[in-house]
Image (tube, rainbow, N blue to C red):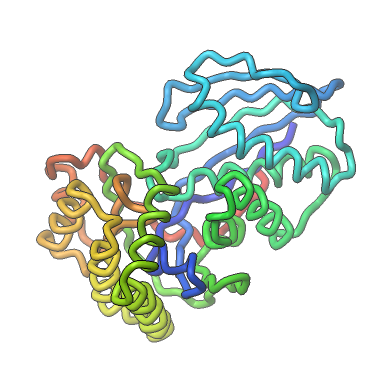
Length: 328
């Protein structure tokens, strides 16, 4: 039996613009997905999923045959989750050159699904690492990140960036620009507070909406480029250990993302609640449309304010996690 875990993430800056070659800076947070795998004597895959902000589900099937999973929850929900799990297992089999390997797998996570915190990336990264090690194949962290990106790219119909999977594999703060991914050293302590509205946006629909605006209006294309400018200013603020300036730039980024139509009433309400409570900055994180906001505040005020904000289902602190995928 082999166990691996990987962290979720928040975006300091750059979501959506990263799709068009602009830089982005996501940061790993101390919320993790854990994957336990044990090799089987056949080619079947049994997956038990827990704590994924769902009721949980168990499926068992042979991925090498035209067999539908035996499911105990609505099929579309399982298909969405199993696309990532199937891809991760195929990557581990490929790395170990064992195409018929079967597994019993348990997935546990304290990262809300579809909320902009990188839950799918964390599950894929942890699953590849655990399954490969169970097959006596030790992958480097960079190899895990690369293989995880291939899974997300395929499942998301080519819309994925490398940001989520690279950040989850490496930990800490990272910079992603196209295919260029680097870890940012010496990042100051970032006192993250996350607010969650209990929902989730449709990433594909939101990405398509930004693309349509960008194609129709020159000023929308300029807005995407402006997000890239915010990211570059933010990198300098991080290098200078200037956390208040990081917060101000997060506010700018939220305004630009809102102009592109990817915020929502609940996200805006949480952003303003955080700012009114004295947060250094606050913005949506991820694709938007619902899900989570991230704020910077080293006092209890923002978490308290969010907990009383209509539409906010949960609020919690989530410190920067400087460690990426790891064996448990």
